[in-house]
Length: 369
Image (cartoon, rainbow, N blue to C red; front, side):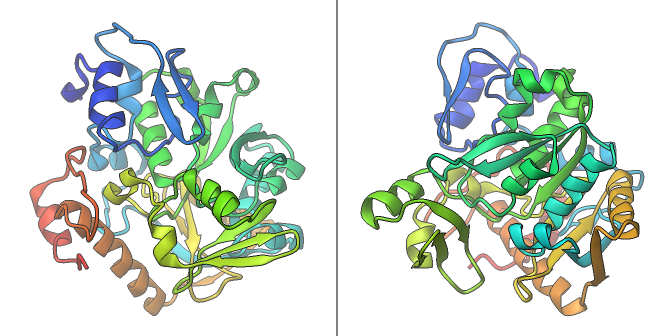
């Protein structure tokens, strides 16, 4: 894209990091020795004089043409302006009890990842796990089922997981599966199609998660310092509930109003809550906690899902029109808020989006309340 010409880390720092739009995807961190992470924050520790940089090109909050990226990963021009391109939507859950019980909302992500490693479709996977030391998120390079299960479950606090692509351990791998938030999925696709960065070519499958917003690291400080909650084993935020915090011996609930104060600012500008650019997208159904919403999007993703079904790794059933209507309404409203730059309490940035006028007009009909 011409908009990337003569843009590098100086522009990234000014337009994204200092402006408060960074979503901590991790694509720029460790790509360059001058860009590092501190918990969920990205820091440029030394000025770079390069006129043009891949750090700027891969960022999901610099110019992003979703239509172009959709055309690069799909063999069809069919595009659903609310849910993105897809082949089929299912209700799904893992059949293996260890995947089902260790995972969240059916354990499908765990099941698909473990199957991909077991069947030799990939030789590694890049996931987000809870640290054994302090329960906070960390990336894990999983090459066996044990470590895949260790990473099971939702992490509502953002973490720059995909920086793990640049670690030495990954340099020996040829094909990897990445599980990430929508912003991380977008960054990976930008890496694959706007740059020649070698790590992008090694990503064989992308499983994208539904994510309407993520929380800052400060949420952990609040739980520990103000509420005295330690050794967290899981966090869940069910529909119409606050955050359910589980430890090895207790269950706590934090009111949703309080949880919302920790939403990362850049998340309010997210235009893609269902990981439209992934091979497969997975999210909760909000109606049945033991099942999830599974969307196969690309040919590669469709083959992955069909293989999992044929091998008895997951079971699926039809997705009801009622559930699809609920999902569409939630996604459309989220997109409308971004396009209208309207939110109840925070500013919203839409300047990074490259979307044609007709699509914008269709989406602006959504609710902004």
